[in-house]
Amino acid sequence: MCATCGCDSEAKISIHRIDQPTSLNLGDITFTPVEPKTTTLPNGRKQIDLEQDILLKNNLRAERNRGYFLAKNIVALNLVSSPGSGKTSLLEKTLHDLKTEESFFVIEGDQQTSNDADRIAATQVPVVQINTGKGCHLDSKMIWDAIQQLRPSENSILFIENIGNLVCPAMFDLGEQKRVVIISVTEGDDKPLKYPDMFQSSQLCIINKIDLLPYVKFDVEKAKNYARRINPTIQFIELSCTSGEGFDHWYDWLKKETIEVPVPV
Amino acid sequence: MHELSIVMSIVETAEEKVKEHHASSVESIDLVIGDLAGVDSQALDFAWDSAVKNTVLQKAIRNVIQVPARAKCLECDCEFGIKEIYDSCPLCGEPLLLIIQGKELQIKSMILN
Image 1 (spheres, each protein chain N blue to C red):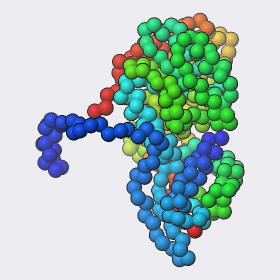
Image 2 (cartoon, helix red, strand yellow):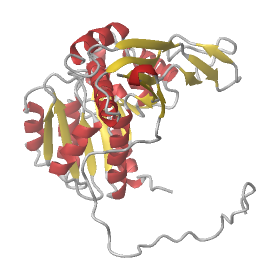
Image 3 (cartoon, helix red, strand yellow):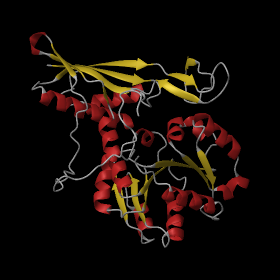
Image 4 (tube, rainbow over the protein chains, first blue to last red):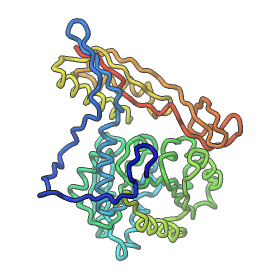
């Protein structure tokens, strides 16, 4: 029995449908969380104490996406990095190696061109390209629109390749289960300190192009320590899309994610 | 330049409120922005001027309440001000912090005409 109000927490909760299902309105969100306090001022002016998160709409739409993925048992991963760190190469190799074992869907985000989506399409995996024009990040509305077209199937893995940019995409929740930040050893090992928001909001950090380590000054341990200072629980996988080294760890991680899809409690 | 998206979200909310209250425009708007919210104030100024043109916010006075960042050490429980996400605890040196203030990004209030 619960000590606060005396309700019986052991009682079985029953949830059942009463009549015919109501039609779902999958239009845009119109949701006002709490009616804000409004004060009438002289000359017919009004003060509205909104206290509303500026990114409220994006966050609401992201939660809706997350619910959709959860219901369909889809693992949605948001891949973020600076341009040229190897997101698309990582995807190409992963899809090529695992597409007979897992079902994959891909959303590609770029400012211009469908070059990356064309590369993914060549692996026979369903893909949608989002071109943001001048936009520097994907947002949750774009993902919602993309999944209307993509229709990812149940029990699949959805890769969302964000715009190459370590700043702006950090602020925009897409509804993903995990955020994966990719850096390559041809970049500076102080990337985590320069772009802390992205490393703080990611759960996995992939260090790519490790076949080039003998030729560059990148200190792997230093980069990991910098990232841990920002996010003590971040995990790391070191790999090379060229040599294939380290991909077994990445595939193990992916398979663990598909088993451990969180079920709402 | 995600500041442009942020200003456009503010414009969207302001347009909604003006319509809802049958007002004509926004006289002033108060924003709360934390030091660790990831918003560059110069970029915000720049984005603001171009994004509010021909909207209900065009003539609005914008007040920004900047909130300094504070954290709590998860090891020794002490609270302190921080400049960066990766600052360590000044007492015990641990990097395990809970950010308790400074991530705010909010429309606090607005006055409608």
